[in-house]
Image (cartoon, rainbow, N blue to C red):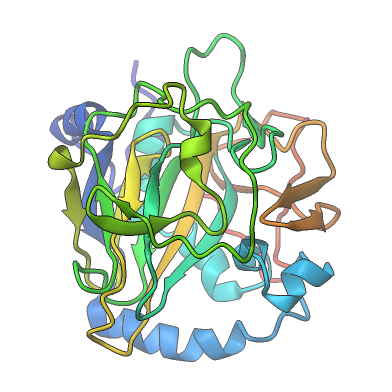
Amino acid sequence: MQDTRTQGAFAMTPEELEGFHARGYFGPFKVYEIDEMRAMWRRERLRLLDRSHAVYQDEAAASGNTNISNYDRHLDSPFLADHISRPPIVDRVSSVLGPDVLCWRTEFFPKYPGDEGTDWHQADTFANASGQPQIVWPEAEEFGGTITVWTAFTEANEETGCLQFIPGTHQTMFYDETKRMHYDPNKINNQEKGGVRRGFFGYDYRELQIDPDWKPDESKAVSMVMRPGEAILFWSTLMHASKPHAGLTDEMRLGFAARYVPTKVRVYPGTDEIEEYGGRVSLERYGSVLVAGHNDNPHNRMATATTTGHPFVTR
């Protein structure tokens, strides 16, 4: 018997699920109206400048000098705390992962005028930068990864640096995450990769390739053009990248990625810190958020409210 807890108003239909399993992504779909998203972001971006309640207060994160500064602001921002539990998102995530779901990480992905594109990449355990697995599925599971819901807070199009996917690549890993990439914060990566100027936040993702001579087939790439308030749902193991920001507008492209796993997955096992992008932050104040169902996994740190006392909603 199908678990009716997965049947919210925005649950994916059998046809939508079939397409998702074939392609590795679903959407775009609407989370907010365009004007609503624009108004909310004008307000919230000013509030997010205040990091006094952020869970990561270490120097590297607080200074904004590493990508870690963009992590997990849902743990202090009421707006982002509510966003990760919105029914248009959680209902669809639960359609894929089942009724018991955690949000274990969120990240901002800004792209400013003139910024390079992001390298093609996949993520299974998210050990790609540190060498330390950040999520671990039960041994009985053949494959892992996370469901990412990437919401456009601004225009995301061919000119501002939208996401790109290579459909159907989510069931084969082309990278070995047990390798270590070498971080160089001063690296300016202007190499033309497949005719596009791409990099990876101070890393070269090609260092993780299982076959050093392999290249992604960019002829099969599709661009995810999204208006403000739209989102796309995809497996982190799907080959994905982004285009450069052409600089034809002064507005940055901003995406907000929320990452989800079933409660049976272990989050940050055996570690009390995140080490990557040249920074190191403590997980002392971190907690995963139950966004749907029940949690019977005693191994994960959990948060029931933001650091400012705003309660998380469980669907």
